[in-house]
Image (cartoon, rainbow, N blue to C red; front, side, top):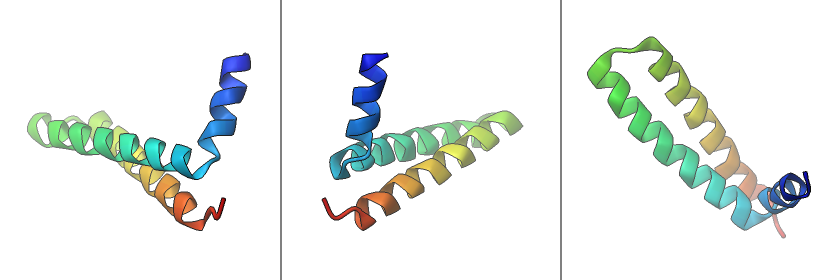
Amino acid sequence: MKFLKKLDTWHKTRVGHAVFGLVELGLAYGLGSRALDTGSWWEYGLALLLLIGGVQNIVRMVRNRQ
């Protein structure tokens, strides 16, 4: 439980948003690429969710002035 609080606190920093955003965008790219090969709808959906989360984190990183 203590680890999750530390992770949440770190995630709210500029570096945390950047790392999470880049990881999510990378996963979205990989999963989206696989979805194109397999045609799996759940992979398309998960890739879209990861893309949205990655963009949100990058926007929060830019807005965060700490």
